[in-house]
Length: 235
Picture 1 (cartoon, helix red, strand yellow):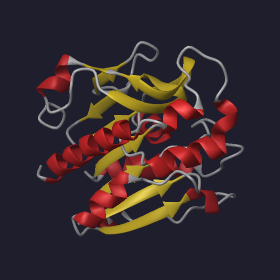
Picture 2 (spheres, rainbow, N blue to C red):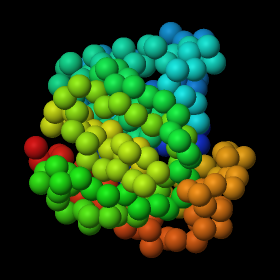
Picture 3 (cartoon, one colour):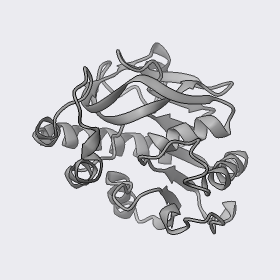
C-alpha cells in the first residue's frame, strides 16, 4: 500500500502516522508545498497512492497571494476524492478538504491551543472507525480557523465548547480532524518553537509548559490514531 502526504511547513510532518505506515510496511511519498513558493506544484497522479494525508500549517486556506499553491492543492484534493482515495486531513488539511468539497472555512470565535476535551457525536459513536474512542477524549489543538460550515453530505463527528465543528467524515473514506492525534512530543516542541508567538492569554490557550508536560496524553493520542488507521486499513 502507498501513502502520500502533503506538508505545508518544515516543522509539521505526519508524526505518528509515519510511524504507523512504516510499521505496516507501506510505501511513503510526500509533497512539500513550502518548496514551491511560486506555485506550479508537482502533485502525483491519483494512481500513485492509496491514501492521502494532508497536514496542518500556520497559513489560512484563503491566503492565495502568500501561498500561490493553495488553489492547486484544493484542485488536487478534489481530484483525489473523486478518484476514491482514502483521505485524512488534519487541522489546515481538514479545512482544505472542507473547502474543496463545498464547505466554508472562517476564523473561529477564539483560538484553541493545547490539550483540550472534545465531545464525540452520537453518529461517531455508532461508526466502527470511532466507536473505540471515549465520549470526551482530551486531544491536542492548535488552530484559529475552522470548517464552520461542513460540506454537503458530511457527518459531524466531534465538537467542543470553543469550536462547534471538530471532525467530520464525508462518505466512508474522507476524514477531517481539526485536532491532532498524530502529534509526537517532538512535533509539539517544534510547533511551540515555530509558532510560540500565538501563545497569548486566552480562555482556550495553554502555556508551553502545560503542553509539553503531558507525555501520557501524547501516548494516548497516538494509540487512538493507531487504532483508527488500523481499522481504516481493513475497510
